Length: 130
Image (tube, rainbow, N blue to C red):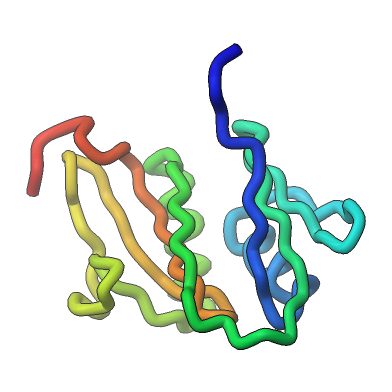
């Protein structure tokens, strides 16, 4: 059997708000409920399982989404329409910019709990650096 990522748990302050933020931004189906989780399933079958926590969310996670060029345009349009800050890098050193690594496009922005979300159109190492 091949090893594949199946799901990961995303701790948040409000699982309903966070899951809906992601599904509406990415244009995904509404989340489903599984036990204490709100599950957002991606097209490759991997799911992000949102769970409420009252703990401080000190260590923000990074979630990268590989999308087509057309999907990038649509989703990035939603990012801008919502007035979200965005960066060309995960360290937030290049505000208001996108990157063109590997001949594609990439951008980083934060979800409501400070988790870093990334859109990219080419996997790392798949093309020329720029």
